[in-house]
Amino acid sequence: MDAPPSLSCEPIEVFGVPQVLSDLRAQSPISRVITEVGDQAWLVSRYSDVHALLTDPRLGRTHPQPEAAARMTNSALFGGPLGNYDTEDGDHAHMRAQLLPAFSPARLRALQQPVQELANNLLDHMEESGPPVDLHEMVSFPLPVLVICELLGVPADDRDTFRRWSEEIADTLDGDRSQRGLTALVSYMRELVTVKRQRPGADLISDLIATSSGTTDVDAVAMLSAGMLFAGHETTVVRLDIGALLLITHPSARERLLSSPQLIPSAVEEVLRYLPSGAILPRYARSAIQLDDVTITPGDLVLLDLSSANHDERTFSKPNDFDITRTPNRHVTFGHGPRYCIGAALARLELQTTLRMLLQRFPALELAVQPHELRRKTHTLTGGLETLPVRW
Image (tube, rainbow, N blue to C red; front, side):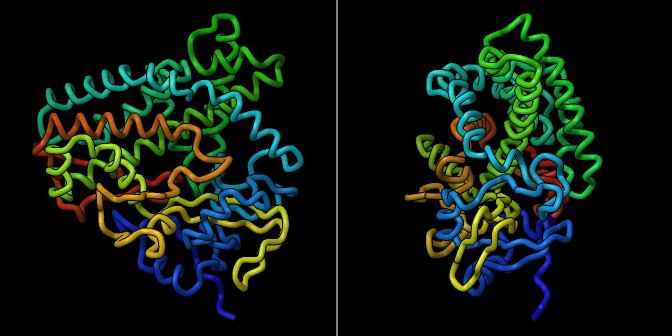
């Protein structure tokens, strides 16, 4: 039998997904692969299977023998099993119950004005700097960081430190480096939690402290806050960069949005669907699962390829077209079911606000380099662009 193909996390294209994934969906939608760190896994690439498995209780994020479990990457935060195998469901339900108030409709409405003001200030600075500028550095990176700091109650002045730790955590090859970054971020959060226990504020960390007690809960709040800080800005940075790039390189879509700004929400959904390859969720089988002619055994690593699912021809007409009016648009970028991303509404708010204002203020925005000169980050959890040079 042929050896399983290697699953590289290095991107092949700036947009869309590699042709090999289209071939897999057609010929072998559940494939045995080798992960970036040399472990075997099942790659699920078809929309119908990914969508179903996202809600399947036979899959989880934990493993009964975490030290022996196959890993997707060497990242300390998302590369392998997370949590306690025996209490996973209850722990997850408790975590969501703690976080839901921070993402309530009322809380998000209260954030609309601050997000708009932050975006406007960053765009002011961009305009004052004059072209060309790096949109990634001037807007896409700082905005989500400032927003998540506001939500959590973390000093935004420390964002350069968070950036270094986040880059270390996201390292998919050097596990020691990733663990150092995570340890540093959790330690920082533990100190902040200790301070906020004495002087609480109107923020998520203070809310979490109010429902906790004891040293163990301090550690749990610190770990949860560290994960929120990382996940709450890294993925949105990537989406802002790719959203801006898609609009720059699709002038007809940009002109349509300038004349019909009410299409911004629909355009953002298409940006979310159209994200590049590499968006993969790791799961572990808790019991045997039969898919087509494949038997997934307990303990196996299962990789749910969201990017491939979002480009499945069976679900999305002309999936390689960037269609800002696509209806329906049932992408799985934020997952599906009980583990649906709790910060999805906040990410949509940031994307809609920033992309709308960017187009309004810089309608002639264009790349300051050739598209083939753009470089994507490699061997990092979230991927994304290294820089996005633009002019107007």
